[in-house]
Length: 336
Image 1 (cartoon, helix red, strand yellow):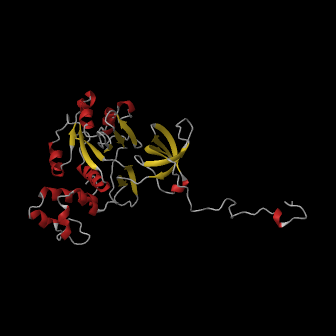
Image 2 (cartoon, rainbow, N blue to C red):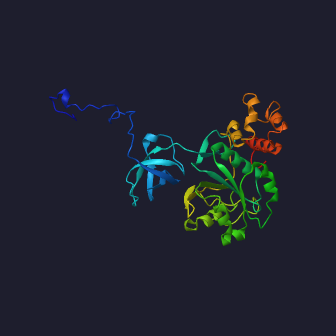
Image 3 (cartoon, rainbow, N blue to C red):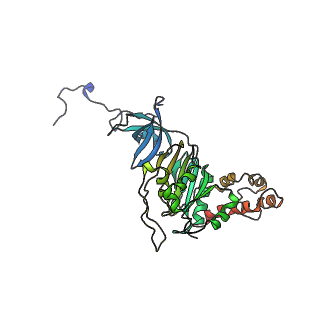
């Protein structure tokens, strides 16, 4: 059947601007200068929960951002329906420059890095002193990721009623990391939360830890109005707890003006993305001694200038040992 009559003119024929029949694409994107500022609180299957002017707003990433993903802690610009009412959806049109980034890879052979948290001031590394046993290799890897991403580390040791913290404190003493030791009783009566909160005032703190160490229990104590389900038990055979936090979530710290970001429990922390030259920045007493190092020095080889620097009395030998132990974590797995 003919679509047009017998006497058609070329003006009667509909023309398409391109083969897909839609408007021509353009590289000119709107600037969205009137976009509202917000902070990403959590991400779930492409939907992002954001805080905008004190309101909780659901949003999705605008197509113009391409593959760039927003993560918890990101400062973003949003347009669209910002009322926060049910069944409304805004668009994230811009992700602001990040002040810090906590990244990890699935393992040391995976070149794809995953951004866990953005714009955090510090990383609280939570480890149990027993049940499950401490994993210094995993702690070292978290420290390397913190130093590389621009976060200050905080060591939180739980379950001190089951084992003393002395050995672990001696291992990390040369790094001068602030720490808090807690017991299960102190978690229940609130004393532990008060002492940990003293380190969180006015800061954005990401909490990371092996499953079963009591990380989410601690977060519940810090933010009781936002209680999250905690692990029920630690497997007696593997020494592992079940993952109960399945996505990162930013929670406001009551009365302290800070934020707590609870992250899922980790069983590995790949460092394939880490550049050893950035880790040295966390050791300002050693960094000047690297000026005489050969190009691309790993700081753990015969020609490393740090040996002479320390021998001349410019820095504590324990600091150099700690640096090399942390760098060595990139060459060995956590369970080693």
